[in-house]
Amino acid sequence: MPSKKTKHTAPTPSELLSSHIFFIPFLVAIAACWLVYRFVFDFPVWFDETLGKGLLFGVPVWAYIIMTRAHSIQKTYEPRKLLTGLLFGVAVGGVFGFTTSIMALLQSGATPQPAALYMSDIFWAEFFLAGMTGFWESLLFFSFIYTVIEEKWSNWPLWASVLLTVSIFVLFHIPNAFLRFEGGAVVSQIFLLTLFALGQTLLFISKRNMYALVVTHAIWGMVLLLHGQ
Image (cartoon, rainbow, N blue to C red):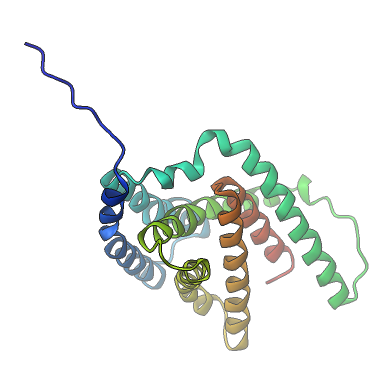
């Protein structure tokens, strides 16, 4: 006699809430591994931004989704959201890039000069790495961390969820700030990271679209690279 198929149903709200008991242990483990990775190993940038973050950020998130069936995380990067997210990300990132470039010119007093940046192989190689960084970090900090914070502590006010997400983002980036900068430059870098994380969190809340964040993250990274930040 054929066996009766088991019907798979989506978890109830109570089941979803209880499943998030794994969130804090997962987050602590990811942070610990990332700290060791940053201070012990010294891989090339291309490895860090592709395979390194894929292993340390992407794999734990997907493992969490499999364990808890938290499909709300997956909904933030559904294929149907790709085109809309990319277009919106280009629009927001373009405004940011234009504004930052104008401010940099005003501060330096330089005269704008035409530059064929898009014709350079180096530019596209850097943009690819910036896109990979944006993908893995958007997946971890917003699709995963913000979504779970919102569900696990659903009674919190919006500002508390935003503050915790921004704080986690900055804490993950502090080791790199100390490795790359010294003195007052570290404070300046942390300030920029805080503003960026705040903007990305609010954008995520508005659109629930990871692809938009990936593009804005990539453009933000390229602007800072071009202006020597």
